[in-house]
Amino acid sequence: MLLAWSRFTSHLYVRIWLAVVATVAVLIFLVGASWKITREPPQLPIREVLVHNTAGEVIGTAQTRADRKLGDGLEFDVTTKDGQTLNLLLPRPKMPTPNPWSRPPFGFTGILVMVGLAVALGAYPIIRRLTLRLEALQSGVERWGAGDLSARVNTDGHDEVAFLAKRFNHAAERIETLMNSHKALLANASHELRSPLARIRMSLELMGADAASPQRIEIARSINELDQLIDEILMASRLDARQSDAEPFEALDLTGLAAEECARTNAELSAELNTGLGIDATGHSLTVQGSPRLLRRLIRNLLENARRYSTGDISLELSQVRTASYPMAVIKVHDRGPGVPPAQRERIFEPFYRLPGASEREGGVGLGLALVKSIAQRHGGSVRCEARPGGGASFVVELPTATRT
Image 1 (cartoon, rainbow, N blue to C red):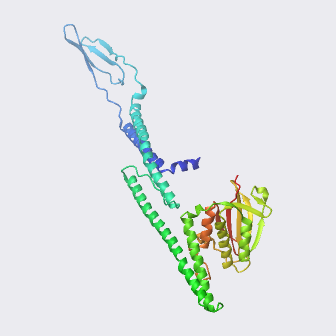
Image 2: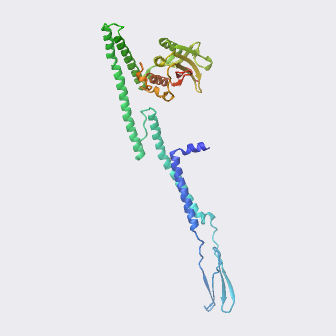
Image 3: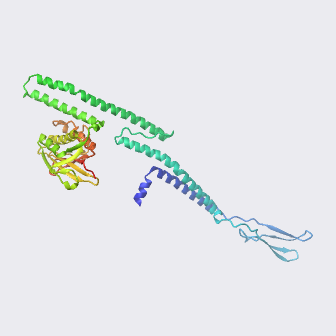
């Protein structure tokens, strides 16, 4: 109950409306209390009666009784000149019985209550309309902040909220244009770098120098690293620009793909396949839906990253799990390297981010794991880094399989 109330009052329009209602309630209480405290019993006026005889002479006088109460008739005790005492009673005229709620203090309090209810009911739609626009602005900003640079918000109106929405749309449009220009420039520049790189490689071959000389080996290694960097930048640009969506997904044997890449990097492969999970796994084959080129790059980057930092053997493990929605194929790459600190296990998947001290190590530019994350997300999956028992790191990729339930 408390949790539901907390969620209800967390909305801005509820807080504003409750503030208005509370203000009106306090005002009603203070005015009513002040009226009741300052109210004094009414002082009834003193009335005097004169009694005349037939000749017009005054034969007696009297005043109203002091103990008369509000609502009583007029009563006089007249003493005539000859000593007689007369009791005169003038009853009040009969009036329709009034509604008790219309008499004080109910009438005054009733008016205050009606005013309070009118303010509360009238303030709610006004406040709600204002906060609905703020919630729409909040939703648009959250979508834009989550990476949807095309998100825009409604700009209807002429108040501060509309002005803020227009400024946000203008800023979002400029940033989207700058980001698209940046992505296009990066992709085009990376593509154009391939031509001079190919000429450098050809010139190196035509130099006729000793292929085993340290200078030529170092130049060839630098060319290969530059070629790999350009290839990764191109793929990252295409993934970011959604150009890879044009690649058709097909049913592919993930086990065979993993075996080829393990043989390339001299890594150990193990597969624990269970056909009882409802996954398309027959014998030693695990089938998933995806792009062969992208998934090959995902596995290759994980294995090369493990080989780069591992001081021992590396291994790749294939398995399956069933989630609440559908079965998942799991790829785990284990190494015996220094491991990844817990505070860095999310950041290592950012483009060009490298662990402190890794810049002096051989190879790696900080794009491999970023590509792994982009490819996994493109296939509806995820990737994470875990500590490996006994030392090292384990990279776990979960991908939806061909069969979903």
